[in-house]
Image (cartoon, rainbow, N blue to C red; front, top):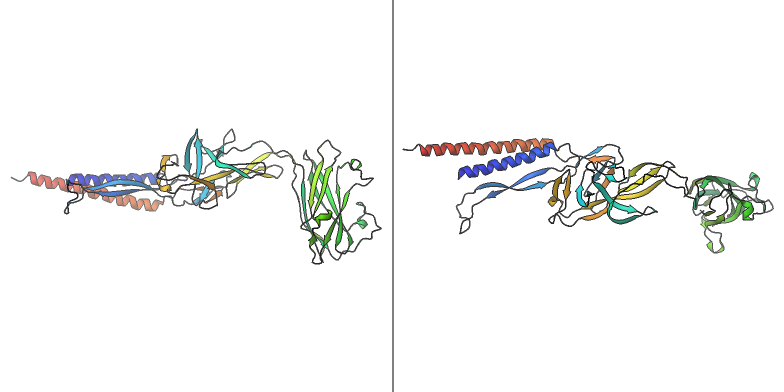
Length: 419
């Protein structure tokens, strides 16, 4: 019986060495998680149970446990190299077969799908025209490789301080955009029509009373005759009123609040009319010089696709040659109640099992899900020094059990030699 007991020890030590060998072989594999051999002892069960003076029957391999500790990051600066800091897996699909991985070495195939180095497609959330997340996170992510069409300007925001010390311009002085004596300050920004052509828009601020300013707007390329401006080449005035603390009074009931709406503005070119809302809500009037802190608008010219960038929450931003960026998808993460019970299927991938629990799909950085690190790869969590110690221990156990076999053989020979 001692032979059999020692053989179980040899087998256990051999499995321990195999596990350590596999860990060392994958010490440089991206997203790999180390394993450990777990053993149980053996007892022979008789008709009356286990006798009180029973001696164990050796050991056996009970489980190969998976260690899902965090691996360190290797920063590559490549936009589709993604690492997960914290819990979660990338969800992959291949002809309907779903697997999960921590290895984020992705690229774009000829059809625009994001795939890993085995051709499996990354899944996540789709986005609508406004870049908002839609879907259940199980859609295959496909990037648009064509350009972005032009968008006409619709909203303008202006943030500036109008000097409270400025002199009031007399009512008898008519506004003339070509005469700087007829207005107090001005600022210019660029608007875009429906074909993406740039058009300068200048805003003239004219102080007409204490705490009261008129704003005139002049836009290049407008057919002012069609507007019926009677020789004028500007719009306005739109009156801004400030309270005694220098804040804008939003009196929208009389149409003279923070928003100035210019509707159905005809242009000389064969393009759509402009409809623009100008937001003056961030305007102030303090006793300091005129200062523009922000002028922004939402139009742009057409642009060609250049590259993508993945944010920490998995949002995929497509960047275009016109400087615009649009959300075109969002990488989803999947977690499990018991990730240690996932089934390893090779290619640094796992598949769901009943013991692992139901998969939960969510957004990176929310709740239990970790963040996505862009331009970085999670390395194997194998510590080579620890594995070398394990190797020495397993080798010692193997040798000890082999020596026990040799000793038992000598004892057997002694018994056979008795006359």
